[in-house]
Length: 179
Image 1 (tube, rainbow, N blue to C red):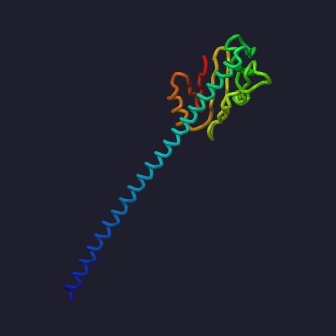
Image 2: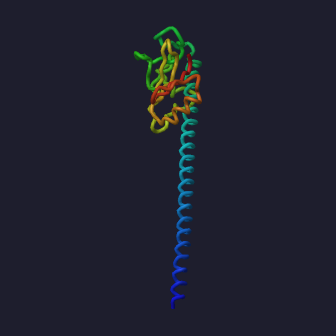
């Protein structure tokens, strides 16, 4: 009888070792799974950030084209505020700023806004989380686009994409369109 008990204790000890290795393997697989999930999440976040940057870069170029088109179509237009860049829109505010959707081409009949130009292209709206585009035209500063809000990562990547023509100040990016 004694030998049976010893053998059963030995089996009990062996099954405990086997169970501990199985638990160790499960824990290791769980850690690998968490690591893979974190990598996938980070990759999705990076892709989303890059997608927003690409979208905003296209918007900047589209808006720039509309501003240049306005001056080309109505080349004899005159904003009447200062002697430079007369054919380009210049909001009649103290700082020369206005929401982009309200900017009017000087010389256009009936106060035609940039979105109403004959090119058929609508003005873009910034992605969720961003403020509306702000157009600014001053004699000293030229024509600039301002964009506030959004994530720090998107603003930083946009600034790096346009290093010579953008300024990054807190939660606002400013893009030089025409100096």
